[in-house]
Image (cartoon, rainbow, N blue to C red; front, side, top):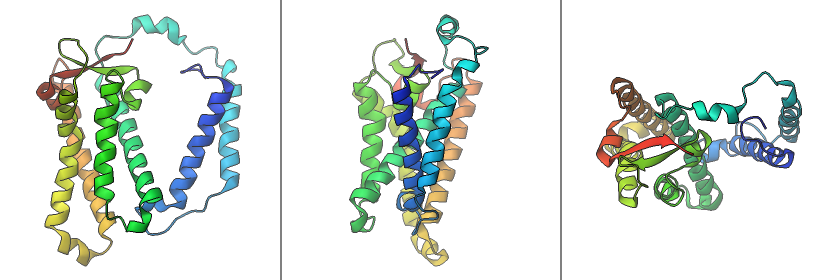
Length: 239
């Protein structure tokens, strides 16, 4: 209500969709990552979470002390801060993986995870490359924090530059994880629960990579990271 000026109907739909997503995540064991659900689909949770969102929407007029975002828009800095980029990436990474796991569990569960890797690659490709290519350099995460990708000359990003950029940012750690998983497959099988250990390795690689990326943005005065420099792209404030 405050940030996006949404109507009550839209806010209600978002609240229902969000809590249903959480309940399905619990019911499916995080979309198949775990062999069994750790909680049931609870209708009471659905009602309570949605009610909380409705109450939050209705009491928003009480917070008149918050700044007017339309008046603040003229004061937005032209350079995108590392924290803003971090928030956008976390949102995008969560949404892309949730979508990939959901598709894999709902439509390919009978195949025993045979094409899970391929599904993830296709979802990453569509989310991080096709979507910003068709959506003026924006992903859902970037849209939420009002930034978009442009080339260093200020022009719109091209398909090839997006492939290069997100190839380094997204696909390199994924391929690295698959390489280590294949390399130590027998050792992982001896430890048991291969999927869980593989997920930990993958998340560790992602964390290390992005910490390095985040540090490089803090060091450089222009706030550009390695994948920015290689693809000759940068984040800019979306008008």
